[in-house]
Image (cartoon, rainbow, N blue to C red):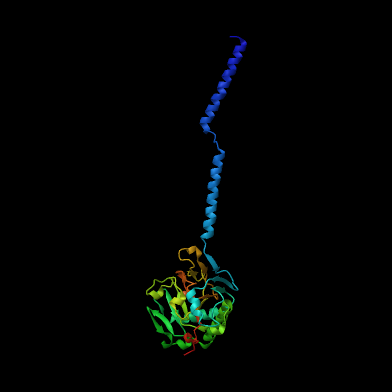
Length: 314
Ligand SMILES: O=C(O)CCC(=O)C(=O)O
Ligand SMILES: [Fe+2]
């Protein structure tokens, strides 16, 4: 073999060894990934799709809150189209037709002390009776008080005079007048065209198992259908959501098939919620899961013949 032939053979051996090494490397670490342009595109489209889905469901999946417990609202409202039946009926009562139907919340109408006085009045009064289920009421106008599975007249019980004082009833009346004026202002009507309606009552809600249908406060309803004379409903909350009780938010149901279209109001001590009582405002109260929730339903009618008078000490 010539020396030049030896050099060529050694070079060939070297090339063979280098190729063998490459082969071993490939086995050890696997083949290098090859990402084609098409793959990058398809992955990008999948990621974009996931992002759009997450954005869409999180936006659509949330109910609207008109007022959270922590908010301090001067006046906040939401307009809704009046139900034709409601508007037709209310047209008989000049000065009482709302400029627009809807809902309003205010935390500035009722003072802390007024709410505290009314809470103590509710506690004292309901302590004389109380439902054996989760919903007790006290109506100071008719005297109706939940008692076990029935109702009694609070004014026939002993000690009522010491419990319900003239000073308490004065606050009750003043608060009612303030709410009446606020409803008139928010709905653009004349406050003299509104009359207090039956039933106007204190409520105490808890998580006790219901004993009668009266205890099932969590069903969707329209106030105008439940209580015929109502034209404007208001609620004054006396205890706080998430502090004094859990659950128990007020919920407007705008589309029964879409719970994510609901509008909620968290009860807050001294908060007043006012709304037109027709089918434009179906609503329910969430079941209280713990603690005790106190409120007053203060209702108004435009029909003077359905008017009730303020309570007096007996
Ligand atoms: O207590 C509430 O928040 C609402 C009660 C209610 O819907 C009613 O009294 O008709
Ligand atoms: Fe109601």
